[in-house]
Image (cartoon, rainbow, N blue to C red; front, side, top):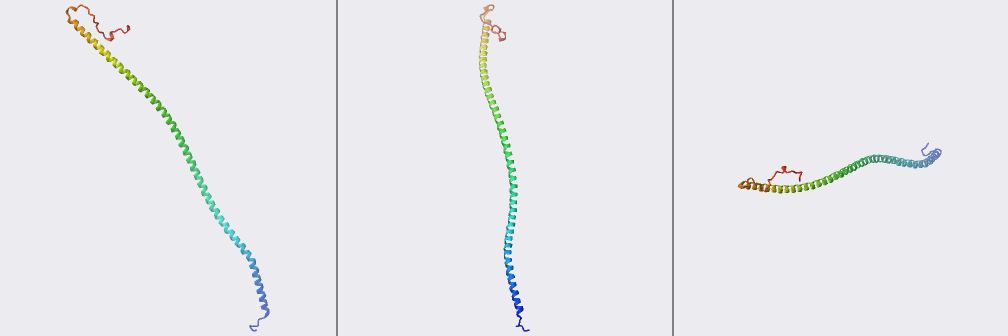
Length: 181
């Protein structure tokens, strides 16, 4: 058998097999093409799903952080509100106490003014009484001096020993009968 002499039959058979294989390849490629498209779509869906899941996890974390932050802010706000209410209550109590002290101060000031006025009146009465006392002492002293002089003059005159004079002997105030006055 010569190399050039190949039988037609196996060549035809190979050709037909090659054609069959080409057809099968074409058919499998045609079948593979929608599968590749489906595979691509599935990959995209998986990718978007995993991105969505990751985004969802991130959002859940963010939501959790925001929730905790909100709880902390609410607690702080409540605490500040309570402190504010306590401060307002303290302020009102202090203002009430200040009004009470202001009233007491006003009353004390009025009482001081009243007492000062009374003191001034008593001092002026005392000054008037002292002046009257001085005048009375001066008058008494002058009367005593005149009586003493008169007595001295009477004792010096020889003829007037038994004779009553018109001079009244001065008496002390305790000797004076106050009922007759």
